Length: 396
Image (cartoon, rainbow, N blue to C red; front, side, top):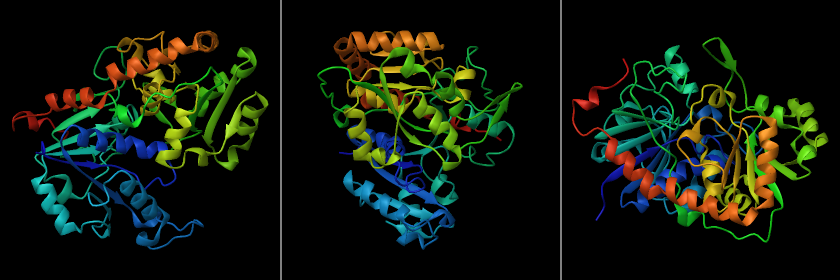
């Protein structure tokens, strides 16, 4: 017997050939299904971004966006539980708007990732509407300046991956929104630990600049992830260890790419992680992860923690991560090693490489304790609004 209908809304076809992004949606879908719910995925897309394989505009139903959506949903058993619709309500894949409106009226929960679903008949109908902020700092700054429009409005509960938001440790403004915190859910069965004979290299999957422009907060301007990566270019030379990065980088940034190569980084094509399977295989075949975070996550002490890094941990792969403030809430030093300075990154890399098997075991144990979807979703569901009085906590 189902615990109820959950609609998960987010961007998937909007970002085709991005296996890591697909997992940020799949984690929630698969987690709810494992927890006994009946999940349904809805994505809203602008027809103007739908393209053919050659990059030329094409009808949405014939686009690579739609092809990617179909393939991912079918692979994970959601081919009859997923719909791709245009932002004007035109259906592309799955149920039409009339059927979706009926589904929404019967849904117990809407989990609206980044407020992606905006069609009012679908967004406002479910019994409990949850906004999930997976870009802490950006979301709050954009809301404060009116750049989000009505994206936050109409929800009953607001959850963020910024674990320190709303505390004195974090400088991100909360404004008129009561933010609760959550972690990313990892269905551990999807990420089994893979034994390695020994340490080989640090890896990660990244976008050099990302999708967002600079954000200014309290007089500080926060730019792209590239700014943080540049601080650690010399790691391969200083540690005499191997580092690989699967990197989405624009040709205009060829000087940065060459700087990485010259510094000893193995820069690999994003095609290595273009699908959910490819992304998972890349993580599983890695020794450990090294990664920095977006400057705004670091500078504000947001407490953000990546779903990608949680997947590395679940596979028993140690992570060497720039601390965004999450070390206040997660145990570090074994399996999960943090740094704030270049020297700390050097020390952390040596620590993992020299006692690799121990850190692998600790990584999986940490994932089981803190990122298991059963635990994460149970906590989230215990905190959602249960009466109409509580549900009036909405931004104006």
